[in-house]
Length: 86
Image (cartoon, rainbow, N blue to C red; front, side, top):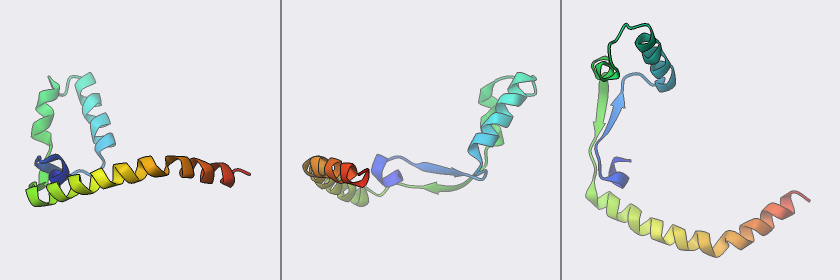
């Protein structure tokens, strides 16, 4: 993703993001944290992915090909889907 969007991607230590978010909102609701900006202090980053511009240009070139392939096969994919529900 870092390559594709040309932005640093941070990987948090906590993989259960939705439960962490729920816990943070609960802490905020009962005033254990004053504002949501304090959450940044609770998040530990385990890895940082840096973008690679060479990979990014390859992905963009391939995506253009993919878009053309997709547009050229939409009708056939619909026929195949219709066949599967017979």
